[in-house]
Image (tube, rainbow, N blue to C red; front, side, top):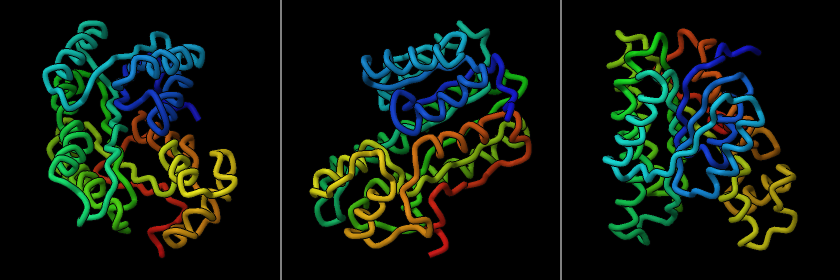
Amino acid sequence: MDLGLRDARAVVVGGSRGMGLAAARCLADDGARVAIMARSAADLERATDDLTRRGSPEAIGVVVDVCDEQRVQEAFAALGERWGGELNILINAAGPDVQGTFDDLTDEQWRRAIDLGAMGMVHTVRAGLPLLRKAEWARIVNFSAQSTQRQSTVLAAYTAAKAMVNSISKNLSLLLAPDEILVNVVSPGSVASEALVGWARSVGVDGADGVDPYRLMDAIAEHFGHPAHLPRAGLPDEVGAVAAFLASRRNSYMTGANVNVDGGSDFT
């Protein structure tokens, strides 16, 4: 499907790995000019090389910590100068790596989860809005999590931060509707991310190698109960494709939506 992204200017925050990189690849495949933001220079270098090979005419890697609002503002200002003051797409795929039950979490962990999982998104949207408003068309896609709908006790702070993402995104969709800037949320379920595969290995699950999503789902079901109707975990590319559609011109009338990519787990 042609997403209408040739020469579109796109920023993917958290775009150097996992689902963020999968979304960035879809944009690059369609000829978008993609800038990815992350904290690791090495990951960014590998990812931008990949995006360039896929067809992004000027893939850019920007080292930035989204918790540092001044640095975020500087990064977007530099991109604005490079791209004529306009931005078509902002995808926020970065998220906190904080796990723990309510009983175990410290105040520092709560703050880290909220800073990385919600305030980082606030910083990037705030910095990107002037550029988005100047563009002929613009989309914002924020990554949440299916755990906001089906709770896990070991993700108390992570889920709280993602619930903030849901609420802020809904508010933004209302605020930006007169500008025809569409704002949507993607909520992945059990996806074979590095973190999830790493967890499976840590508990000694045989075959949890990130290749076989059926074995990975077996491990999740054994430890937490089966989270989806489909018998396998999702793949990052499957989430990235949905995010890319929501960020594209082909999505012309969907805003304020929270789209589950979860194998049917919201029906359980």
